[in-house]
Length: 353
Image 1: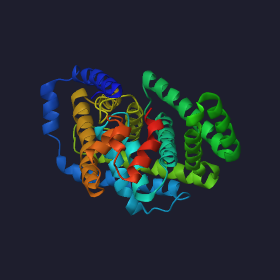
Image 2 (image 1 turned 90 degrees about the vertical axis):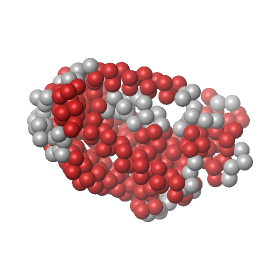
Image 3 (image 1 turned 90 degrees about the horizontal axis):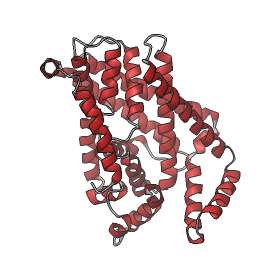
Image 4 (image 1 turned 180 degrees about the horizontal axis):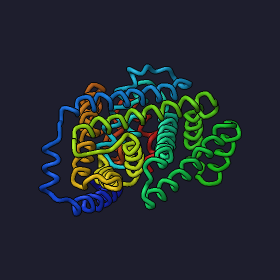
């Protein structure tokens, strides 16, 4: 709670929650929640974990040039990362899962974070593609269309930069070394040079058109499956009348919106955009709110609880996760810890800053 990132996220979430709450008729909202057929949550959760398994396979594929790690071994790591995203601000779960992977398999945190950055990049590209694919059938309000265009330009620009970095590793290493020599004091240069080289290793998948195509294909499959969960939960609300294309659009917009700073669990930044998308396509505000909030809880709760279970099995402690999320001092807590914790947290220090 001492972190400025935490309070920034709380402030943004508070604004979105206020915007959500002020438009509700609480009696009608409560009725929509109580009338839902919650038996649909069981298949919805199963569909969601199928999407998480597909995410795990994608990460396994991206890591294979560094180390072969089975999907079964990686699945708990991915779930712990989800749990970290859900309980800590600033998507700290991405750093946490890289740290856990370092402890389990010895994969460099820097290289692992590069693959995570690629995942987020392709996720963003697929979200933008969803929007453009559905526009002929479900036109997006002007404000949201402008936001999506902005995100699309940003994601494609980052992809071009990553492709250029990965295309010629030797030249990129030399350029990074010159930049580091110009900008950092001498005592920091060896560490920074090592981190830059390891990060470049994580971009290896971008050097192969076949691997690029595979990552794009799996990313699309992941998000279509996750939209399937949105559709299954929609069946629990008889008053909600939306087709799969609208839910694809909603999936894209709410997940792009969660890139904004927010309180842990994307409170508000997930809910308000989702409700507005449904309202734009003629759904009653209170039903849209009930559906979106139930959906949010169904996305958040099961994987967070499973993450706690896997965290206990991996003998991770809350103090470690606090350090990795930026909520605690790495150096002070790492003293006296096993070597793998000290080395992993020291490698993470530049990423935290």
